Image (cartoon, rainbow, N blue to C red; front, side):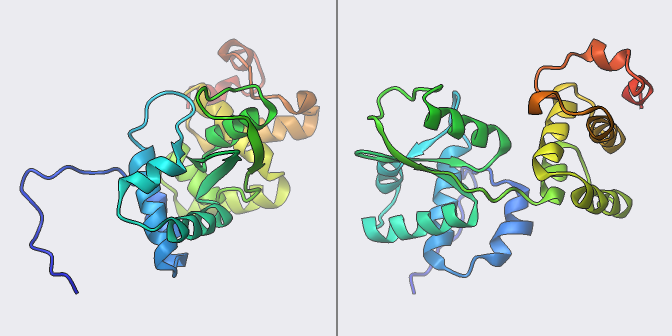
Length: 219
């Protein structure tokens, strides 16, 4: 065992999503997966631009790993749904598995987004696993209380996962980070229909001020 001498007083810090410690790390038992995941997150968080991605070659250069071990760890992380993995002819890219990045990955796959220097796509692997509804709420809305947790469980039984994600995204885009407002969007979609599956994508604030849910906007 190599002994560690301790952290420096002026050390640099790396950001890690809090959900990693509560919903991901407890389930990781493979050391290669853990190392690859932490390295990928460390490099992805400070990235600029859209979409934020890291190439396999960048990951390989970031630390002393052998290629096969890194590939194995990244494959496990992608299978678990921590990372999104897109394969190209000569390289591969990885994105953190967020709603925004899942949409970006789909656009890259369909050719709507070009990532410049990367060669033509060979094939793409995008996990279908969706984030835990509690993580989704904490990451985008706020602290999870027991009462909200019960309502989230009920919503999970009543609505498709994609609807819940889109309703939360709609509320966040309007800066209405309240579960009652999100629930009202889901109720409206159920009662009135969801416009070609795109309701909540391009709505404007005025639409909700004038709707029967406008009173919730001020809460």
